Image (tube, rainbow, N blue to C red):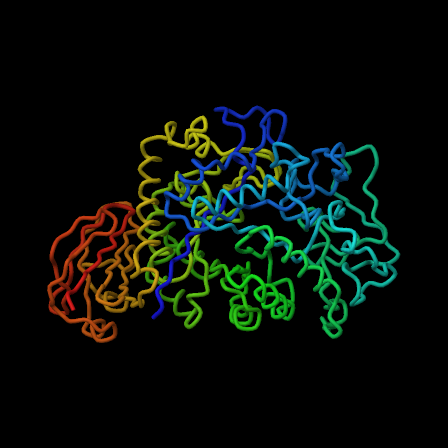
Length: 566
């Protein structure tokens, strides 16, 4: 077996690395709140992020998107307020695929150079760079003002008299103007769009609702949705070639991977073509798909050539239910069983910008249940794991901020900063000096766990063996609140036991003879035991003859590595 390095991804919004004041003055206001910059990610800041065990940083919101901030002085066309969500705008309403968000630059004229320098600093810090690729939709007023002259803009040559044409980049509703019926005018003149373009969430109406993705328009990859979804892929639709050019543009900037937004809303045939085309030139670049339909997982892996898919509907939803006491820990077994053969292609996480914060009142109301959840997500297989900036210090996401309001998430639509991150940054010292003791301890736990996950070959490469079946009727093991599994690599065996309970538990884990046979190690043989989360060493053994006893503090887990002499 080829030894691999386990990917540990850190998702962060550069926009948050701005105002460090203890209290924000006015939600969403750039003048009052400031906004984070590329330059905030100094070598020191990056070193502190890498210190957590991070291998890749997903910088979210890099590509220029629609905004209510006026940058016309810099040659950037202004967006109409009616088709911008929040004040900063959604980072998923792309305005120019060939440019970066001017908010993030110290010198707007030098914004692309500043991004390129960020990529270099990140690489110099020993980490790789992931950015978003948003292929399904763009901002209503998409317009590239920095594309090269020979690059045709999206929609530039569309036949707008046709609802669908394989050569068009957008879908249209001929003869009708876009109408927004929910008070979205916000300026002296109404937003005008004729003919109306189809909205990004496949809303084929000239009057999208406020819950539609009304600020975006759907891109046309050759699927005629209004006529049974018939596909027109030969000759190749022009949108395909334009998207390939965009991907190659960013890969040439040194980007190491793309997180592809709503990838399943784009035909898999496009991915089947474009990903190999990119990898012909940049063979090590990775593609991560946001896909929520389990029935399509294998299609987007085997046909679409994606390296990794979100494991949201399976593991995330299951572990969340376990953390909140709504499901037994034994349900985790069903999650991995449903992914047989493709588990190594899944990206595990407990937080991202779409999901509620663990510590929010809408989730667990406490950051501590995230510890056993993260141990399971990070250590049960070889696939990548991701954390969301602020998760490691228990960010609650309970501010009443901006477009989304108080919903347990951190706004992505407005100028904002995150209190826990401000306290970790601590006046740019990045020493956590303003964190509470509990927050410092939580970050230390995450750091230990993620470094173990990254550094230990048994976690990056080992076989997996679920022990829940052998402990289902065990009176000394509560399968509702504890989960246990093993990993095996070369002469090492890992016993992982987690406790989702709010109280300390002493458990006795049954290890059946089948486990020794399946993993190929000897019953009742002495081994050097290392507690990977404390680095304590002793000598111990595992055997079918009697259960292995483990003391588990509240909301915790143990990663116990047994090293055998060959």
